[in-house]
Amino acid sequence: MFNKTSLTSVAEAQQQIMSTASCTLTTELVTLFYARGRVLSAPVVSAVAVPPADNSAMDGYALCQEDLQLDIIPVSQRIAAGQVPSALVAHTCARVFTGAEVPDNADMVVIQEDVDLVDGGIRIQPSALAQGQKTGQFIRLKGQDVTAGQQVCDKGTKLEARHLGVLASMGIEQVEVYRRLKVAIASTGSELVNPGQALKAGQIYNSNRFLLAGLIDQLGMELVDMGIITDERPTTESALALAADQADIIITSGGVSEGEEDHVKSAVDTLGQLEVWKLAIKPGKPLAFGRVKQTPIFGLPGNPASVLVTFIVMARPFLLALQGCSHTQGQSLSARLINPPQKSSIREEYFRVRLLENNQAGIVLEAMTNQNSGVLTTAMKGDGLAIVKANTCGKAAQQVEFLPYASYGV
Image (cartoon, rainbow, N blue to C red; front, side, top):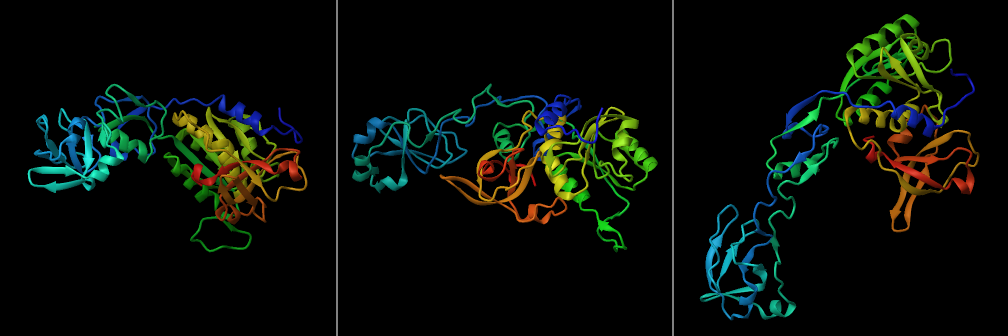
């Protein structure tokens, strides 16, 4: 099915992989306080209007516009936030505070800075009258934010802080969400050790474990840490089989190339089926996607920059789709790369870049000096990825797509 020379384009691989993505997770109710990062399994409809009544946007005086002509306007009541007002007596005003309900019969609020206190009531300053006072000013109307019966959040919405504030304003106490997707991660390589251990000759610290754990945590998913898989075929097969039983999806790093010590691809072939292998992407060509006992698996490359790129481009949208998210793509912006590659590649290239300018003239980027796939500090010091299309270089490669790290939780 796969040979040593064939490369699948990024677009083709994305389409093929995403066509198999569907959410089959069970649902649960969670309180709003703990709902950030969860994905709605049903739409949310408001049972109330927000605000529930007309209220004042400023400290001032509620009155009828027709009474602006009065020299002195008596104050007939004082209304603080939380108090229930009486209907406004004709040809009077009500002292109101920010958030207080506006009484019936009032159609505007004059801010306190435009008013002088005098015997018998208030006098609106001549300068304020000259500037004009409009009907409805400084009144937040009932239902201005949300109307009763309005569908405020769609099924598949990933809840962030801004959503929680709106739902709380509607009196929502709990929401129905999909359970958290269980994502098993494993790092392959007999040379790997975890931080905190002393390095022996030939060993390196396992950075991919922590990179993947952070990326998955940012998505609000449940991590199943399978640890390090040493470079033996039986060990690889048993570890992947166990991961398939414990998680909804598996993500490994390393072991997907064609070396004698790379066993992930062959283990997937044995335990399930390999559906995608080797992409026309740089960095990250030796990516594998398939299934282990019907559990999806991404076999990402071993170099940390390749892990970052392939996770963002290939794994992240698939994970979000499995989680039930209706929006699976991060932000992509048009930008100009000041130092494009001078030699074209048959692969689509993802350059780690830093942001130089972001203004009305557009976004300007600079590619970091070292683009080696084993170097991750250029990602840490940069602001995102710039996509240079295959077989493009020089001036033709200056116009790029920019994927800002901030939009991808990096």
